[in-house]
Structures are given as C-alpha cells and as structure tokens.
Image (cartoon, rainbow over all chains, first blue to last red):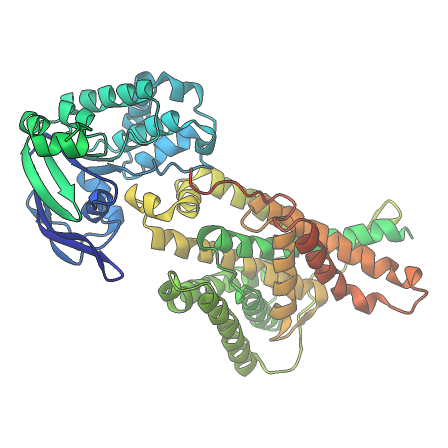
Amino acid sequence: MLEVSGLRVSYGGINAVKGIDLAVRAGEMVTLIGANGAGKTTTLKALTGLIRPAAGSVRYNGAEMTGVALHRRIGMGIALVPEGRGIFPRLTVEENLGMGAYCRNDRDGIRGDCERVYALFPRLAERRSQTGGTLSGGEQQMLAIGRAMMSRPRLLLLDEPSMGLAPLMVQKIFETIRAIAADGVTILLVEQNAKLALEICQRGYVMESGEIILHDNAPNLLANPQVRRAYLGEPS
Amino acid sequence: MDIFLQQIINGLTLGSVYAIVALGYTMVYGIIQLINFAHGEVVMIGAMVAFTVIGWLAANTALPPLAIVLIGTIAAIPVCVAVGYALEVFAYRRLRHAPRLAPLITAIGASIVLQQIAMMIWSRNPLAFPQIIPNTVYAVGGATITLVQLAIIITSVAMMIGLTLVVYRTRLGVAMRAASQNAPIAGLMGVNVNGVIAATFMIGAALAAVAGVMVGTYYGIAHYTMGALLGLKAFCAAVLGGIGNLAGAMLGGMLLGIVEALGAGYIGDFTNNVFGSNYQDVFAFLVLIAVLVFRPSGLLGERIGERA
C-alpha cells in the first residue's frame, strides 16, 4: 500500500532523514520506533506532504506521491494524527471533527461518522460545543484521532499518540488504534513508547539518526537485545 | 440642535465605513499575519470605478439614482476583487515565508503603485463624486440624519451580518478559520490553503469596494490619495478592536468613528477654539497610541495559545 524508497529530507543543510526504505502492506499495523530526534516525525511529515523530501520516492497504491499537493492527499485515503495533536484551538470539537470530513460531501455519511466518533469517545460528545483549546491533552488526542477517522482513511499515520498522556489514557488510545485497525484501516504508528507499539503492531522499523537500523516483525524486535537495551529500558 | 446626538449619528456613519474597511485588514491579518497596507488603495479604486460608472450613467441615462449607485457599486466590486486577488498572488504569495518586514514593505510599495496607476487613469485633481441621491433629511430627536447616512449605516450592518454568516456558517468560513489557526493541518484536512487565502483577500476587497462607494457618496469627493488616510484609520480601528478579530474590527470601527466625530464636535469648546474640527484626523491616531500603550491586544483581542 505504501512503499518508500531512498527517502531523504533535509532542513537547512541538516540531513534529518538519510535515505530510508520502508513498506506498509494493506491491512498491516507497522510501527516506526526510535529515540527523540531520530527523524521519525520528519519521515511522517514527508510521507504526508507537510514537507518536501529532498530525494526518494513515496508510492501509495502504486502512484507516486511526492508531487501531489498537500490538500489532495486526504481524498486519496491518507490521514495523519499529527505530532502534538494539531487541534484547531478556536474551533469547537464539532467543527474540528467537521474539518476531518472537509474532503467529503456526503452530509448524512458525515453525520453518521460524527456520531460514531462520539460513541467511541463519549467525552467528546459531552464537549462537542467547547473549543478544542479548552480540552485536556487526552481529550485532544481523542479528538485528533476522531478527526482523522472522519475522512474514512484507508491508511492512518499516527505520530506519537501517547505523548504527554497519563497511562490510563495511553491504554485507551492504543485500544482505539487497535480497534481502528480491526476495521481494516492500515496503520503506520510512530512511537517513542517502543514496548506498547511493538505489542500492538505486526512489524517494526527502528530508526536512529535519520537511518533505519533494524527492521523485523514485532515479536523478534521485542526479543532483540539491542532493542531491549536501547528502547525498552533494559539494563545493559 | 443636539450636538451630541448629531455627532453620534455622524460618528456611526463614518464608523460604519471604518468598520467595513477594518474587516479587510483584520481578516487578512487573521489568516496570514500580514498588515495589507495596500487595502486603503483598494477602497480608493472602488470609489474611482464607481465614480466613473455613476457619472456616466447619471449623464447618459434616466435611471433612478438608487439604481445608478447600485450599478456603480456592482461595477466596482469585481474590479476591487481582481485587485485584491492580484495583490495576494503577485505581491504577497511568494513572500509568505519571508521575514515579516519583507511583505510589509511590499504592501507599502503596492500601495504606492496603485495610487500612481489611479492618478494616471483618473487625474491628480480631486473629482466631484456625483451627488445624485436626494439630500433627504430626517429628524431624529434633536438631530438629523440624511438618506445617505442612513443608507451607509444599513448597508454596513447588512454586510457585517453577511460576513459573520459566511465566516461562521459556511464551509469556506470554517476553512478560513481553520487555516488561520493552523495552516499546515488545515491543508492536511484537504483545505486548499492558497485558495482560502486568496478568497480572504477577495472578500476583503469586495467590502472595500462598497466602502469606497460609501465614502465617495458621503463626502462627495474622490481623489487618488483618499485611500491612504482612510486605510490608516481603518487599520487603527482594527487594532483598537483587536487585530485578527472580526467582531473587534466592527466594534473598533464604530468606536473610532464616534470618537472622531465627538472629538471634532467638541475640540473647539474644550480648547477655546485654539484647535478646530480640522484636527479631527488626530483622534484616530491618539486612540491608536492609547490602545498600544494600555491594551496592545485591543479591546476584544486575546492572547491565547496558538498551538493547543
């Protein structure tokens, strides 16, 4: 579904991503783990068109994506839950969800999906006419995920959904991600919480200083001594 | 005659125009944090185009005055919209990610260019704006209101309501607000951000066109430099209300108009006629200074976290 080859991204002379290859097959849950500053977020931004890669190709269902305008991508079935949630702080919860469905024009379908999000996250239903900026971090994360689902994506990219959240909330968010995947949405999850990510995903890529240093199925990565030392907090 | 009430009426008239022009400043600022200093010139172009059309129609047809003014306005709107679009595309778009001083200087440059073009087309002399609307006067309390004043106030309020509905009730409006709060994420959601920014300029320019017709009709004069002071005052109004805030621009415009009118009405009395009503223009800038000193974010402006 998603094939990345030789992707390079640089910011003002600094190579943040140094030519990576990565693939996600339809129906898979894949995670990209790595330490802070490894280039994970930059990779996702390049995949979604938020930044222009310096070189390499990003193919989605066989079509080259690097030249496709940012606002046309969501209609192709790609949605991102961005780093830091990216909620519109002065739009209401309802309007934020509506923005997720901006690319659609089936009014009834949108209405129904909105209710589905509210059923999934009753907290959002309670706060539907509050502005996004007044929500707690966890609620904002729910809103960001709900908003991404409003476009009915086939490929969902998530950037650090556990960041800054209380453990209970993290659990809730990860359960939701698993449920979304069970509905047939392909998932690429970027996480610093490597253990959680590897537990729910089938495969994982490990990123370090802009390069992918390991790539295996999740159980193998969880058992890999190098991963355990570097990312799972095991004493060396 | 009740001077106080009279000056309030005059102030509301002027304030309506300021508010409409201020909306153009504040919408553009809200979405790309740019002060479009050429906006006053768009008002001037609107007045000039309307001047030409109204003058021609008044001389060559027997249409009723109201229809003539309406046609003049309808002719001015597309011209101003085109100018607003051109400003965005040619002057500002390339500088969207440049340091903030660059687009600001470009705006001043664009303003000079537009003035000079207008001077070449319509002459450097003040033009007598056709006064075709009958000077009907109505008594209100101890004061009077003219038909033109009434028309200006009603038209302005209608446009403010219309704009508010567009911004808060339409798909374009929600896209505008989303793009102003987080443009990249709005793009990710499928909003064509460049398109929305261009639409913002065009809406502001359409309002400016109507404002141009209103000032021209009110003062009975049009001149290629008329946009500069008007634009600057409307900018003061936008800052007074809190730049980036729609309701703020409306409130700021109205307040500024009233302050100016009352100031002009009473400055003679307060200064023993040392200063006369020709000092009217000073008040807008006094208000601007006061706002910047005491409440830099404006009356309705608030500094809330941009990134949630």
